[in-house]
Length: 87
Image 1 (tube, rainbow, N blue to C red):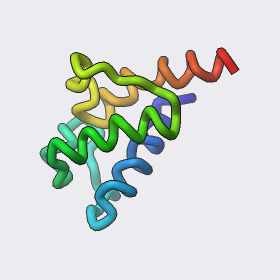
Image 2: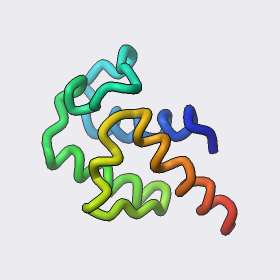
Image 3: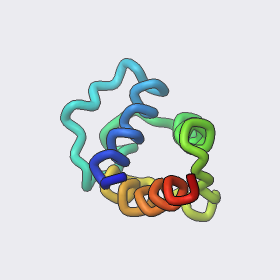
């Protein structure tokens, strides 16, 4: 999986959690919470959806690595690729 595909997977989850948000103009290097109205429960929903949809576990100590789309891609892409390699 590429970084762009990872970003799309994260955006798909955010679109389901916050359907009223316009995600078309998000800047990938800025914090998501500064651009989209996500509260702490929404953030937990994102983490839970990553586990449910993709089998990716994100430990609480690493939640900060999901701050922006760029950091999500940097953190999650190797995890996606490791899971694909196991299949």
